[in-house]
Image (cartoon, rainbow, N blue to C red; front, side):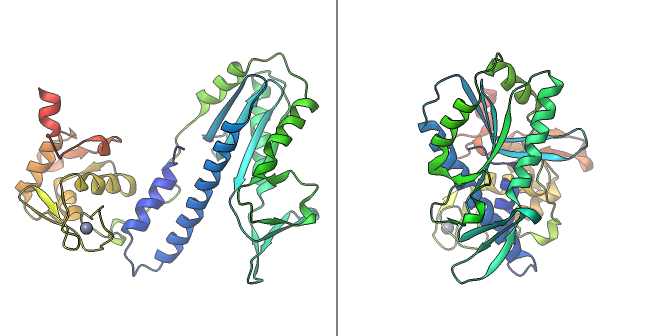
Length: 325
Ligand SMILES: [Zn+2]
């Protein structure tokens, strides 16, 4: 499952935000919800992988793009068949779910009897549906487009007020798809024709948040244990106080966090501030070893942290020797 840029941002943010930060708990809660969402999407993917489609189909997971008005669409899954196109919105939520159709109010009651309103998933999915329809019309493709909200947590209880709404438990998806195929006869369009329209539009949207670097913990952190004390750099390795692990590659995780949270360009000074290496020349040596692309000259010199920074392996051979030999 491809994680969105926003997911990666939140994942790094909860790792790096100062524990005393006023919004630390808020960020943590948001990330928990995103983790639940991702696990729901994985369940959907597994369920669809198990389903036997009787004709050609294509599924785009986590389909992100911008519309012409400059607003974003993030669709959990877009299922394309010769019969129909289905917008799937997955929810991994617990409790008892209720709906008031007249006022579009979606709510839940938790086990402790606390009630709360949740963002209306039908309106979200319908907004995506309208967008998909519009795109298809622009391409002169006339195929039914429908939306469905899928509840991936089997423990959630759906109130009778939801019975007429396009919502069901994940286990009911195969039956729903069978019924749709019967309801809508096959069109003359090829799945590949429709899929290529959306593949061309697919974008990787940036994270929906930004963070002041001063609100983040600096340092290189151990990935073998959970200690919050930064590792110490000496003799070419990062050493963990707590579990005594030593590693070179943990630096890459720190640089990945920097890239995700702050920028994909880093100066020698920012590198020292973020990693805790005090010596300017040691920092220069380490950065040179990474063989990163650079921009600028002398005082304005910036190192570009690539998307594939975690693919580099510093443990057995250096990046330099690997690519220069
Ligand atoms: Zn450790």
